[in-house]
Amino acid sequence: MGAEMIRELLFREFPQLEQMTGGGTEHYSFRVPGHLGSIAIIPAYSRNFCSQCSRLRITADGHLVSCLYRDESVDLKPFLTEDSPPGLLRTRIEEAVRNKPKDGFKSGQGNAVSSMSKIGG
Image 1 (cartoon, rainbow, N blue to C red):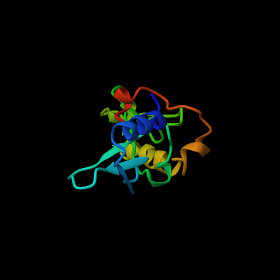
Image 2: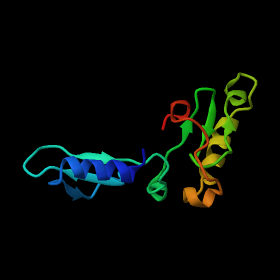
Image 3: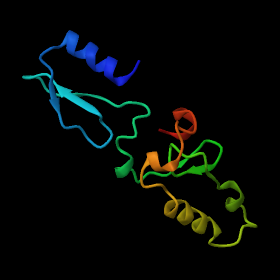
């Protein structure tokens, strides 16, 4: 179910919702007047917060992912052994940061690379 459908259903059930300015990851944020708290809708693949993203993710199998919309990753496992030259792990991480796209749309990919459960969202 897409974010627009969720928004529509919320307003159908709670027409008094007031739209708020959400955080960087919140596409839609609302509150009910006179009540504490708020609710936010975060679309799965909206890319509406790419320009604010400074995250690097390490997958369960040891790959560094700099962008959810990029197929490229850095396999960190070879740099975690005693045989690995000193500083090489740091160099590879720094390269990943330098090569991180400014925007998911500019990464050239259409969809996220993997399951959020694998990459940590």
